Structures are given as C-alpha cells and as structure tokens.
Length: 379
Image (cartoon, rainbow, N blue to C red):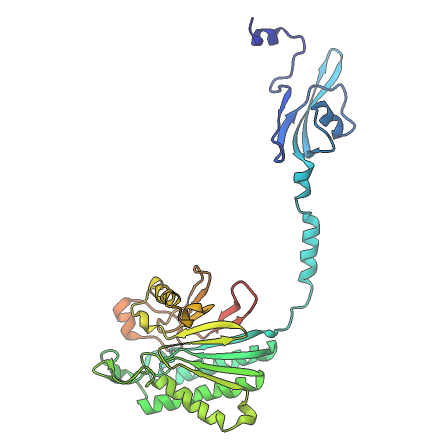
C-alpha cells in the first residue's frame, strides 16, 4: 500500500485546494496553512503556536485568507497567512511617519542662498556682426532681455558670489571662417569689438552691486583669432574675445570704489581653470574638439586627468562653440555645453540641416552637493 492509498482512506478529509503544512522562508516571509479549527482563533499567536512557530520571533502579515465549511461535528475553519520574522519587520520604515515628516518639510520657507551658493552666467557665441536672425538690433534685444531677467533673479536670491564665464566667439569677425562671411556681417571688426566691450561692461556694471564677489573669466574662441589664409597666425591669446575683456578690466580697474570686489581670470592659453564658491570649473571654447561629438569632448577632457593637468581635476567643464545645449554627467563630473546667443547660421544649416534656438545658460554653483550645481536654466 502506498502513502497516497493510505491518505485516501483517511476519514479526516480536507477541502479541495488545501493541504495542511507550511513553506516558510526564514527572515524573508513565507506562506503557511493551518489544520482546521472548530472556531476562529482569538489572535494570530494561537495560529503560530499551531504551526510550532514562536510568536516572540514571528508574526502574521495581514490580510489572512480564511475558508470555512460545515462538517458533521460543526463548522470548521482554516487559514492561509504570510509569516515574517519580527526582526525583518523591524527594518521596514514607518511609512506614515515618513510621509508626515516630508509634508512638514514642504511647509518650511526656502533657505536663502548665502555664501554657500554662487550664480554662474555663461556668455558665449554672441558672434556680434552676424546678419542672421535679425542682425545686430535683434542680438541687442536678446542680450539685454537676458541681462534684465538675470539681474532680477540675482536681486531676488541675493548671491554672495556671481561669475560671468566668457567662453569665446563673442565677435563674428569678417573673414577667414567660411565662404561669403564678409558679405554676411553688418559690422566691421572694430565695430564688433566695441559692441561686445560695451555690452559686456553693462553686464559687469549691473551685476557688481548685487554681490560681494564678482568674477569675470574668459577663454579665447576661434572667431576671435587673428587669421591669415584661414588659419590662426600669431598666438593663442592674440584673440579679440580676450581683448574685449581686457578693455573692460581696464575701465573697472580705474574705479576701485565700485569695482574693487571684481576679479578677472583671463586665460593664458586655450583653456582656463577657476574656483568659484569652492567648486573647480574648467573653461574652454570647445573648438579643440573640432567636429561636434560628446565622446570626443569627454575624451579630450579626460586626457588632462591622465596628464595631471588642473583641467582634468575640475568638477565642471563649460564649453561653447557647438551652439546647442548638452549636459553630460556620466563620468561623475559634469560637462555643460552652452547654447549660443547668435541668430543662427545659414552656412551651418546648409551644411548639416541642424539648428538650435538661441539662449543664455545660467545655473547655481552648489558646493557640498553631489552635482555641485543646480537650478540650471536657459534664459
């Protein structure tokens, strides 16, 4: 006779779909079933005792499934329940308390910026003199609308430190960069540099009273190069993008009462590293990478870490040149590719079919946070 045959002869029949016993995974939880009861247990510890489980160590997780049926000796019950160890349950957070605490924090007023936050404003690729997108009049409108909006923002937040990052190509130049360039400008080179100098000075003049520390950092762009036959002919820093910043510096240095808290960081090569609010920021126009490729730019940046150059130690890399917004933080640091302020490029669009809207990138520098930046916006 087999065990199955023996079981079939038993008078203690069980309802269909139910078999006595349990399958328990200690510390994780399990499912157990009980033998029939003639009445519902007073508490679940009674069930645990039936299963030979110590109620001091284990507990039932509700809801508990129950079935009942009538037998010749009265109504009977069985239960199906999930069991976990009390030690495991103690590690489960009190969701109600967590929700209440989170809601309480929502009602608190936001903290003011203070000295642990700085405002970064990226000034790049104005290409003053271009006729696309409405030419110089439209560029002026775009620049001063951004200046006014950012000034109102800075007054509201009250930053202790503000940085203006000049990433190059502030001028368009008139020849040597693409065919027909000379016929696609509405200002000559002297007028372009004077235009950029005056607008940049307005940025310095407007932001200087709003902070106790104003930094103007500048790197050269390719459109500022002094070129012969389409190639840079003198030195890296013989560049119109740096020249306009030096002109503004000369003006503000004459007035230490108003601008004594203004610091200038002008590159001595194609890139520069500056510290703002304790965060190290690398600046490059971006034309060293030539054809636009995120991998190419990131490889270029990482190569400086291998050579132990300060550029490779930066928390944030800022570039211009490619006229589009791009953010990459897969390396654990952040590369920000800033959009341009020019009115577009008919030449580039004809070559690639690609274009991006103009805009001015700005963000908060936040030391002590995982990213070290936040509240990014394109104005």
